[in-house]
Length: 295
Image (cartoon, rainbow, N blue to C red; front, side):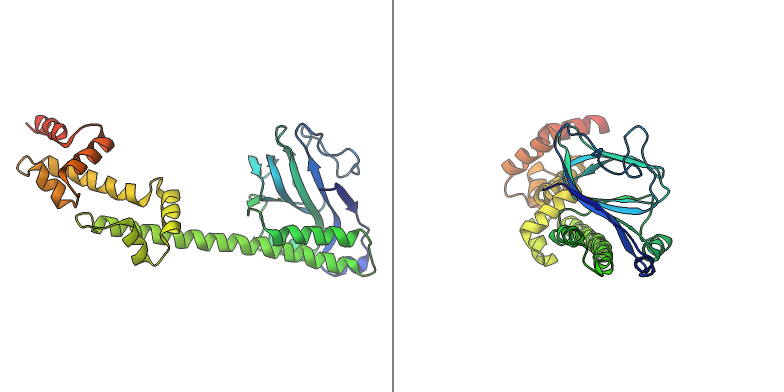
């Protein structure tokens, strides 16, 4: 990355377009690097102790490293690579890269009725100024396209780059919506899987069969299930069987081998092994303790 920034003149015609770009740039900050660069104009320069208040919006994309951010409406929070930071006019804020990692940032400063309306309609909120979207090449290209156009400032360039800035906002709004839908769909599938495991607790059932019934790939299913529950589907299913076994072991009239058979374990030995692995004691010892409590 080559450090670059430019502050742009704006005409009345540019303002009448509804959205105009005031500045743009990209910065590489290495570990222990000074931030921000002191060569920025006084009205944009700031330090961590004092913070800063702008009369414009800025959209910042952190593509490498990590750091922290804080504003009037947002408590101190960690910023990681893949995060969009939105600065709001009149809102005191401060942010900086971590001294151990530094960070790479791309930004564009904008103002106009279009973005004012987006804020008025709650598409953008000062209470939520940082949005994690991950690394998206399309967003990266839009920042670069704005930067490249400002290097020459050809006639009529402002509507071109303000259109790119609006496209940029539309892109990360789309990404957020898609992520929300995917999360919702995943949650529905995981909840269905839980029901499948519970309803098949005494049957010869497998996580692969669950994935097949849910019409999803097993590799994806296993990863998604573990991310939601902390357990692989196979371990979750075993855990359900063990919990059911505990209930059955409280009744001394049911032979332990019968419990192993009823719960679909391939053998008494395997059942005993799994039970001890999950509880720390054998089924026999568990029953002795349970009977001791009962009587």
